[in-house]
Length: 112
Length: 114
Image (cartoon, rainbow over all chains, first blue to last red; front, side):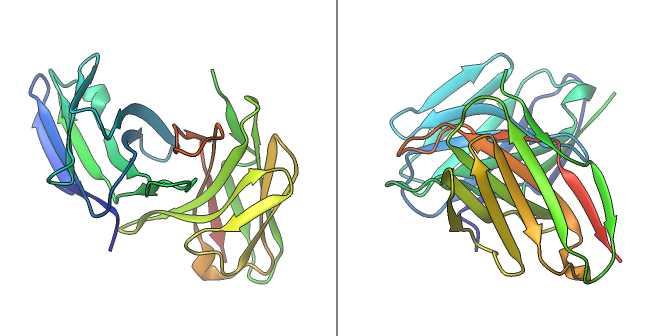
């Protein structure tokens, strides 16, 4: 199974509400990243959190990391219709590995 | 800003054809990657390259090969296209380092093999 798995698979909310997505992973990591993908487009990097960090903010995004539970969450506050996209977490496998492993994503729909 | 470009947004090929997908990045990144993305399966790594002429297999290399003759360009080759290679192909690049850093993605190529 995947190194990183997002939950839920799909989320539908109203504009102005907060959206929370979760990611669980299996092995030790150096960092965890969140990416966004608009329909039919490439992925865009949102935020990176290192294994020694617990929380990180970027604009309306807040990411937490709990290495003891091997989980992370992405919170988008005051959501907008333009936030409608798929959101992926990506983890490395530690060590000198170049690869990122992506989850299957959470499809967020923000209704106007 | 980093820019990663892919040669085609949409491509239609016939079974058995040789297919070339090109990717170019303009930020002097050492690492480049090819993924395919399919519904329900997420992104899967096909091949990656950490330097010119260097390559390593990813999770699903069968049926694919790659070429990196110049640092800025990474090509994915389907030697004999098959219908199960119909997919969205995404190229990405990143800086070198022992800890994986941010990957920058191209817009993707949607390939249909008939």
